[in-house]
Amino acid sequence: MLTSPTPKYELDYRYHVMVPMRDGIRLSTDLAIPRGPGPWPVVITRTPYGNNDSLRTERLLWLARRGFAVAYQDCRGRYDSEGEWEPFRTEREDGMDTLDWLSRQDFCNGSIGVTGRSYEGYNANVLAYDRHPALKAVVPIVALPDPVLNVPYQNGAFFWNMLIWSCMVHARSNQDVTKVNWADLYTALPLNELDKLTGFDSETYQHWMAHPTLDDWWKAVCYMDKWERVDIPALHVCGWYDDDGISTYKNFPGLRAAAKTGEARDGQRLIVGCWPHATNKSSQVGELDFGEGAVIDLNSLIFRFFAKHLAGEDHGLDADPRCRLFIMGENRWHGLPDWPIPGATTTKYYLHSGGDANSLFGDGTLSTSPPVDEPADGYTYDPLNPVPYVTDPVKLQLGEATDQQSIERRPDVLVYTTPPLAEDTVVCGRVFAELYIASDAPGTDFTAKLVDVYQNGMAIQLCDGVQRAEFRESLEQPSWLEAGRVYKLTVDMWATGLRFFKGHRIRLEVSSSAVPKFARHLNTNTDQNTETKPRIARQTVYHDREYPSCLIVDIVPEDALKDTAL
Image 1 (cartoon, rainbow, N blue to C red):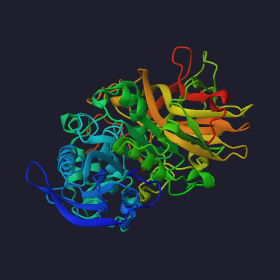
Image 2 (cartoon, rainbow, N blue to C red):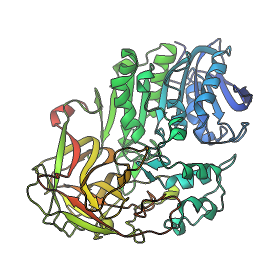
Image 3 (tube, rainbow, N blue to C red):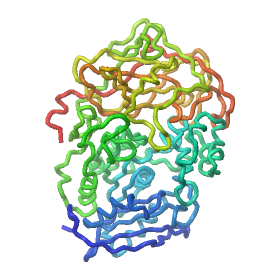
Image 4 (cartoon, rainbow, N blue to C red):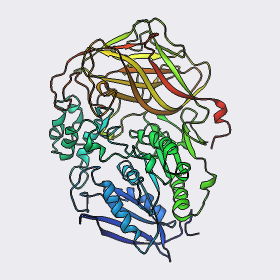
């Protein structure tokens, strides 16, 4: 075999190879080629973070020593590449031109794979539709999704981490953003001037501020509406606590159902660990340690996938399960035939209260019994006193296994909790809060969070989300609220995989802010990126026979997990 699961080859290096693009701009590309007769399958990563970073090149060089020629390329306008840097705008065209160049090199066997993390994963995914003939497979790892689904906007709300990211990738090289006192900016206004308050004058950030909706400018760089044009396999990788997980949670099942060919649909594979955005680096996520088995030999799994699809050599891929899912709580990996897990039951936990679900000291409950005639819950949302989010945005990871009790003591957080569970309950799949709401503001946000409540009261966050109310029908244009009118609104909390142990409780939090994860809504029907005058909103959440608000999760029966532990 040409490829080997163990190191087999010495490498020849070619640095700073300037690869020409269609408009004459040249992109700096480093190559590592196995010594031997070749030709070789090729794997490339296209990065905005610098292709000479030894930590980032580790996986590519690991693959090269096992029989792949590898390429690591600086994106346009970054580090040693020519041109002007503008995130997302030219990545597909530059990627296609690079594939064309690689396919003509004498070291290439005609089969190329693309991989990478985060923004690099976006660069892999955006090449998968109407692909170059040499592109045979992609491995997107914690890939960015379409921009309006998460970065820089999540369902209408600005994802605050992207301010930090735009400063970090400002100009040609990565900037030191640790010197900025970010906490001083959490509630600074207007939003569109925050880049200048950090000391950066970011053209990228200003472009984002000028395009707060899904307009043609954003549609030009979206890819998740093109699943039916994808005809190659993909190995999707992320973690339950990853900030960009929605890409994986939508792309894997979307391509399983809609990819262009049966072979492509069958070729989709999935790995989901317990990890945050720092994929497979540690078993520690926030306040919890998920055990020594949480970190896996991910390189070998990627190797097997690429060896099969780029070299036609099977090192055990055919025997691997389609999906490797880490079930938190029990802290074990399971090999499963698909995701959503076959046999899982989509279950609604309905909101109940006597009209006083405010804080964990209130009377909010969850049960599978639909509500009857119950009073609604209400709270006051004041943008000058927003609900905080319990993590540090400078880590570029917002959402970890952290205790939420301090948040749940606030009266502007509605808390709904099941009784102690009579038996273990495995929740693994997509998570939504389907809410019937009203507000006296024309525009506002609703947030939701799924929580695992321990017997000692500790309340560990699992997943959360936001929905800007005026974008409940479409991300393309707002549909403003009428005071007092009831609207159905769904908050996408993405996904989780957890065994709720007997005696634990399932909890849903509902509020209207999560600062600094999401830029707060000022409760006006104006441009939230330029507005400076917030107003207070009175929010109402209904749960009765006519308006049955609920938490929606997938519950996995024990039989579906029998004999699946890896």
